[in-house]
Image (cartoon, rainbow, N blue to C red):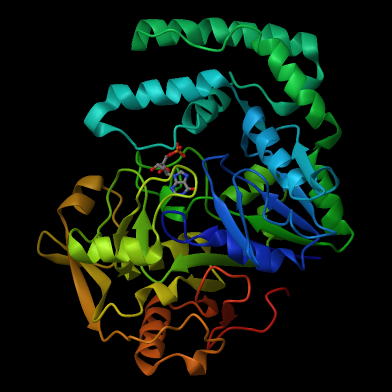
Length: 433
Ligand code: IMP
């Protein structure tokens, strides 16, 4: 038995799709444990680009079972659309995909309430993906949610959904002054959609625990990033799930003691989509250049991402809360030709230099960053396949980040392609124990 987790070190969009794809080729199970179709994991195979939102990243590999774990919120229509898109491209989805019956369902009213809540917040909005994630998780916590397995009992499901709908309609009308759309026939439509999924519904926790007993390899696939975690992130500008390593046990049904390796993915700089504090953010021309060079637009919503320098304070915090064993550094190629690069190494606030990531947004908004300036490089590094072949200034930049983070850089990625990746100076050949 061996298990590894891959999580996002920053605010999501770190390039987890490609990393998970590379590890998934050697995994028996790939398991998503949190979030929903707010995620967008991109995998490029030859000339083909796949963007996965809900389906785990092992789906392109023969012999891998991909589980939508119990910690997810599942939009049935979005899932079917994603499945059909992959099937149309020849991927045998039904063979490789399973859904935990304990996962919760996102209904159209969740999406609408997400939009209404954001509109009401106005300037203070979170900047959600509008996929209904927050309202669906809120229902789960309020014990008002409906689980995937409930659809297997049509009468029970219809009774519950009708009761919830009455409450949601009143909420929409009384709080937001609007009517819910798409409520007619919702029971019938949901049951119709669910029929296709019935053969795929399993007790996911039991499946993975049995896999452990049989000596299988399990890869836990994080979505979003640690800084968007409900508790570890920059609340309330976070998503509504536990995105870090701590979310794995609850979101899948395995013991927290059963994880062998915790890995995280980070860009060689920082990005964020949506609102909220971002200490190393670059405004103006340099930020624009970074956005253009990295094509920094959301894979799910197409929104331009905010861009900034690499932030060691944030990075170290994320290493500690996740208990990381290794890091994947991505998008290093994007920094070619930037001239001098800066790295944030501390935060100055009220006369002190903070080296721990503060929990108060007011501090995060007011602080000044302390930066180190490192010389950049001009060479195109997209064809480089070993650390020694990187330009000296690029090697120095990577060495500096690795030393500051105190966790080995296992792999370095220099482009979106499956092959544009190599072992870091202190990386190990195999990522499985
Ligand atoms: P929600 O997850 O749609 O509720 O959005 C909450 C916050 O998380 C917003 O700032 C989103 O932009 C952000 N977010 C959610 N999913 C992702 C993701 O996959 N990548 C990056 N940001 C995300």
